[in-house]
Length: 421
Image: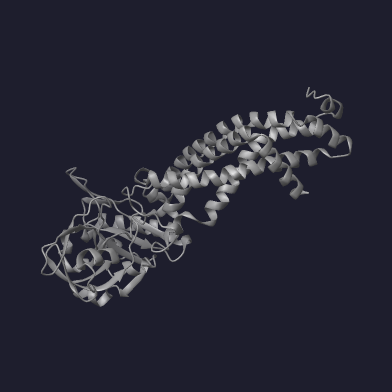
């Protein structure tokens, strides 16, 4: 039966080419706008290598220390003493790591081969050894620095394959010395390039922060929960650490933003309790849902006019089918199924167009530099494909539901006389 519906829908598309093209492209443009938002969100939140634990990772990248008696205060990315005394001691998480932050659009570290004057600007991250346990980098050669190397402050470095090519120009980089801000580091590992889409794993070089003057550094804290159920407890433990700070350093008090889940971090949500973060996320989600509904309703209303005109041309056919015993629900299902073919074709085109939009507008949608690569693994996923199909179904129901219902309710005599009153 559905095979027959498909053949009939295909013949109708070929017979009314102009209207069919308008219907398909109208659906495609609607889905393109909706899927651009969904694909961008999926890229930022899907758990793939190297950020394989996004669903249970939390971040602290902002703090405020304030003197309650004098009113003086300082804020920004947490300094080393806050990381060491109040974030590393957290007991609930599986891992707690400190890493220096970078701007993906500004490579600010001077790098060159030992004995060479060919200096390149690159992105440097200084981290602890735990950092390599939270993220899953693909090592081409070597390994990350160990806990022992980190604690000893040995000047070792992990670099990307592109960094190796740029600095050593085809020579073997493994085991060689690289100058980072004119300080020598021995290369112990080479990893595959990391896209700026992965904001916490992205970099060109990684070194132990103990090889630097760590007291002068500021750190983003990355916290890995053993289970997503532990996230509220971790946030509450952070509040306990704020109270500990206030007790130990009165009259100073400490405010730690978050810890934020990956979703809250990407959406730029503010809050330092589970309730505050949840409330702020609810507000932003409501705004997003409202935008998506507008993007669904406007094209669906326009497409419903096309669906209605198509059905009017088939009133005699519908009347004859009903005269031979076709049920109302059979007519309804047939019209919806035939319209679904148009929606699915538009959905496929819309999804392809949404990828093009995301690529062209990645600096705005994803906050990554123009020209940066976006891994295919973040684009093609089951949730994205399901979202496309769901959007196609909704547009199909909105655009063809009322015309299909009217067609199924039409009296036989009116259908045969082409009278839809």
